[in-house]
Length: 227
Image 1 (cartoon, rainbow, N blue to C red):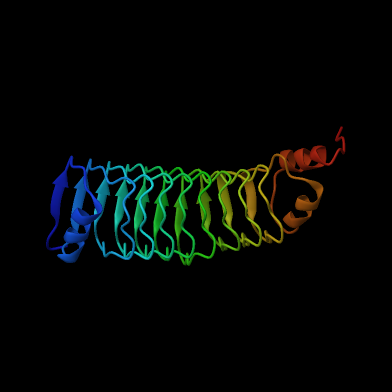
Image 2: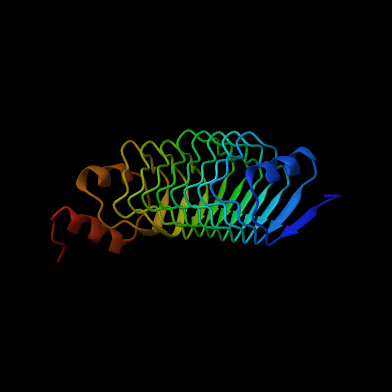
């Protein structure tokens, strides 16, 4: 990256950001406040948002290709149909954020809070997901096939029609997740919390690898006593 304009500790309004985006030069915004601003369809390729507040701002349809969000507060933001290809979201709060129809191909989401976030209809080829909380999030029909997932909390999430075939889950939680039509053939779930799984959902784990302890837990959830 040949140029990067640094701006720190400022309250930025929609017009400020619009002028910056029109320069075509990536900016590094550190410790800035950009709350409740409509930044839809603006261009931010290669931008860095660091320790900044983006709460309730709108980036719908924005170009955020290769952008980085580091230690940001971005709860209740909207990134619907945004281009986040190769973007990095790290150590940030995106609780209740709208990612519907966003493009997250080759993006990284690491150590983020995403409780209640909506990932419906996203493009997520080779998305890296690690160390993040997706409790009660909507992730219908996402493919995690052949991926290694580490420290991801899917508890109470909508995982209907998700593809976990041949995946490996380390220190992950599927507790009370919604698993209608999800697929787990060949998945290694020995590192996953399967608590709260009901009889109908337990059948979906046919072909998956689980531990003896998990098998006993599943039988217990069904009311079958193992002695």
